Length: 490
DNA sequence: ATGTGC
Image 1 (cartoon, rainbow, N blue to C red):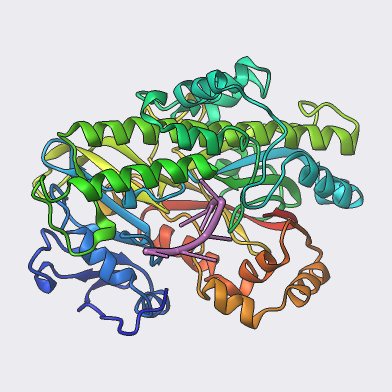
Image 2 (image 1 turned 60 degrees about the vertical axis):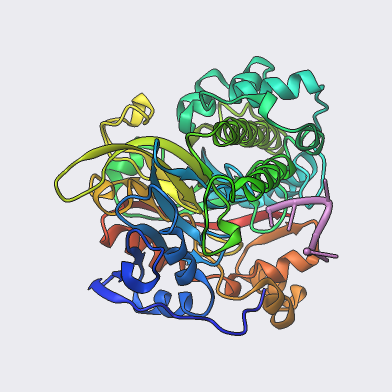
């Protein structure tokens, strides 16, 4: 979408990487908006509606402290992508636009015992096999055929369903946010239409920035932390899976945004942007949405679980060895489009409130000690996964205690676009993008050539800068940096 | 992001 006139809100500098839009900018603002960025990333945010949207979010009832735009923030539906907001669970609201259309879009990292030298000779075969076993592209269906009864189990139980059917290893769930099963999910709150869209899409990647990537560790920032995560050496091969809840989550979002739009007036909710459509948490509608959101989240974790199963199978075929012998374990799986109920300090006096944290294009980054973190990592903190785009680096970080003070325990989720999809298609011919990548030793398989242009490295911001700012502002500490050698896309 | 757009 092209906006003729972009309003740039007033900005107050708090520190080198922190800026504030004062609460006085709009009459409806209840708190300020905080922007975490360097001057370059901030300038980029001024070219679309990112800052205006971060300000608008503060008009939602029950919001505490400030709304947040992370270093990778860009314009989204209602909220910026890279947006965080915490609402009081009694006086506040839930806004589906603050979670996003792709509910529990997220990232899963697998480790291997293999090095780049082991994998190079088999890379083409490996990428082709993954492309065959995990279909990519809009509307693409997977290899599984589920009954509606099984689909309801996926929605209610998440990864537990997949494990009961033999898709994965019993220990896998210990390395997934919420252990792959969001408590309170209710399949009966998901529409039949959403179920029809989702029934045959488990085990597919989708399109856009979604991918399965074979990567090589190219820098280790903290050897002790890396070792604890199974990342032992430079040159080690990793697999990164980036996808979400496909058509099912999209339909859940669509359904409940409509519910909110239709009831806003009678709830007395008047907001500066209709895309902010919200439901008071005291209403049945809000509770139904949260139960459906959790079900869609379970679907997304199960999707990444089924994909993990097929990736392991692809490695088995390429290397003729059992995946457990190849060490294909899950490092961690994060949700970066989701809402969670958490306790947070909400003022300078140290008052703690139970809040609903909206994280849209934002990764939880809890520090050591929290019960939400798997036992194996509880003494070091939660792994944060920042996927790059096709051809650019990805990062593993670990949550820092200061993330609670600065961002409600949150870190960025990616690089964020710098060129619109249409601009990228105009400027970057797919064959040229592909040959540049191949000359750098990166094999790309894509369902559609236009995606190659849209997802070119040049279309994205600098992920190194995003990870660096996350560390400098106290959100999360860098552990390792990985670069791709094989990419499977939509 | 999305059986892709009022």
